[in-house]
Length: 453
Image 1 (cartoon, one colour):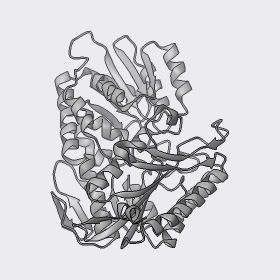
Image 2: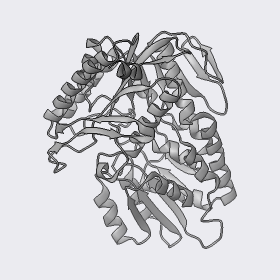
Image 3: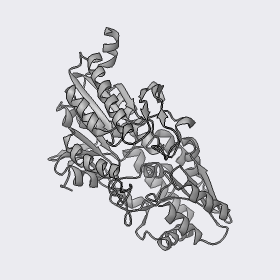
Image 4: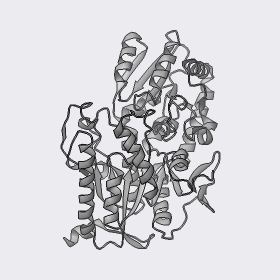
């Protein structure tokens, strides 16, 4: 037993304390058996790289509790989801929940199991001086149970708020979604630390509270692909390839993209879409009617990066006007900008503020507006487009690697949540509200207080 305890508690010389770290989220192995309409590769990469980055920063996870992303019955035919031990990348030990896949029994079973596992974890790590429970979003696993478990074991709590669904906008209007939104409003302020994907989340749900904005990060292979990419349109006569990847749903602008593409006549244009979600059928119908459209479905990250490499422009059509998506930030944008391929994007979240210098901004979120900007980009000199892509890629390499992002999270936990003094990160300066990254060309918000923008 003593060996187990020691393996669960890690002493960090920089932090000056033995810290036990538990994670509650939805990370699963990237295997075909987990690929379904609820599987979101951006969310998976976020969790995976966050945990690996924190481990490299000295914060090892001795417990990873994870729910298998699965649409609830009857949207999925699976009624019973069997859990058990699994292994993530670089030997991350995953503990998958078993649950009855029927709402609300699903949430209750997962919540009770979370509390029980945290109680057992406290006993295994009883030599630890400090404990942290880190939660990824608050819907499933339910944040109420995570907070209860953390309170029972006297642990500090941190939450990554990467998306909050608004009933009637990005979620149905039924009572489960209304209850979830109501609960999140009341639970979010009770966490000790908040890592948010967009400033709107902080302004709306935790005004005046310190927080860290972290929309995701990039891996080394995402940069490598862009550097060696071959522009498919450098020679005249080659088709102009438009690519979009991610969850195929209305909020991500799939109907908008398909309508806009239908207004581009001629064989010089091609459209490729990758990803899974509720609008797969719509895309397949469009591809059957128009031979210029290719639907790749859910494919491995390596193949997604190849699609980026072969594209002339990547489109992030995240809707911001007809649907309330202010409590989201598209994680795919990080991959897009790292690829070296030019990007068309709506003004979602802080996209214009931070990335506006090296993207094509779509302000008119109509099929006509998107058609017009695609034609504009296609008509530009390929060298101009390539330069814009390289500028974006260089910025991402300097500021947005997961190594750099995880260090920010570790520092936030250390200083803000635990109150432990630590040496400042490189290339940062301190302000009254926290610390801000100082490198040009655009402001990168670090720890700050909501409402002080």
